[in-house]
Length: 392
Ligand code: GDP
Ligand code: MN
Image (cartoon, rainbow, N blue to C red; front, top):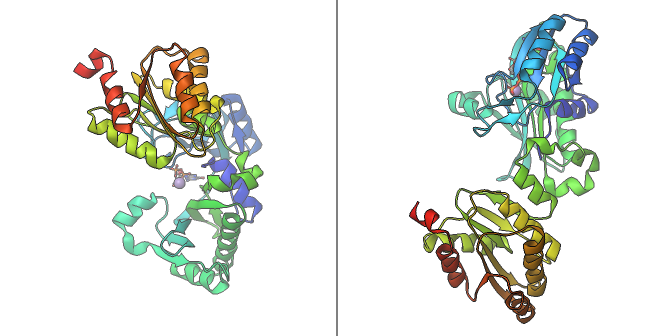
């Protein structure tokens, strides 16, 4: 799960990372107020969206005073910004972060990531901050410093000092860098983060270090024990279909085809998508309803799949172990009642309580196409598509 820059700054500041003073704004008036609060002179106005590359995309600007701040805020709020990291639709700007302008002497890159190879947290740093890490790795790989942290010891003081020296820091900056590194490491560990990135970490004209930008993302599997972090979620920044699905215990990924899939288990979902391709069709999505799915969850799966306008037929493929075919069937019938389905539906049920499930479908009087095997189901789904789609 990603969070906004201002949230990451607040977290990192609470662990001891120096950040510029600033405030949040949801309207041009609030942005102007934040500017006055900061003294009414120069400030930096930053679009809060879950993406990097905002600077290049016009989402970050140095503003001169209150009127300029209000005008830029009015220009930005409500728009979507498209960065190198977003899709063509971009991300909507609903909030701005207005902070005091910093006097930048040098920009550094600092990141904490999970290195799967060594199974440890790794620091990545560079003396050439400001650029995205992908560009740095391509254009100036020599400048990248990597350091693996031993979990039994934690971030050792000598490692932090060595990193500060390699970045060319000197005097009191060395001590400040050690503070920043330790704070980021503790925030990462204590909050189950997957990534902490400060880009740029700047050396100011007076020699002090400040985090000018901050990005954190978290392990969704650990959110149950980090309610303070879970509360920072902003659904407005997520794909609405994917967040709706996640809210109902479904794993959903939207794709380009027209055959909507409702399947249990990631493996069976992948296999079903392959069988659809083999039969000459294209899946509209990956969807795993998980184990022990209630009729309600199955019904929500229909809602999710049908929210994609390209879907022209639905394939339900269940190999029930922990699941129960009768619950799945009840969910299908509930979807017909509550969601209203006007396109063909192919259902293949197998496993636990299969007889009861098939009976419910057969006696429903609904135009459901039944299939016995996966291959049969995939072929039936492809054949059931409207003629216009087949011709196209
Ligand atoms: P990103 O493009 O999404 O990574 O957003 P950043 O927060 O990193 O901002 C992009 C760039 O704006 C930075 O690399 C800085 O060069 C510039 N910038 C941000 N804040 C300030 C500031 O306080 N003063 C000055 N002069 N430039 C800033
Ligand atoms: Mn940045």
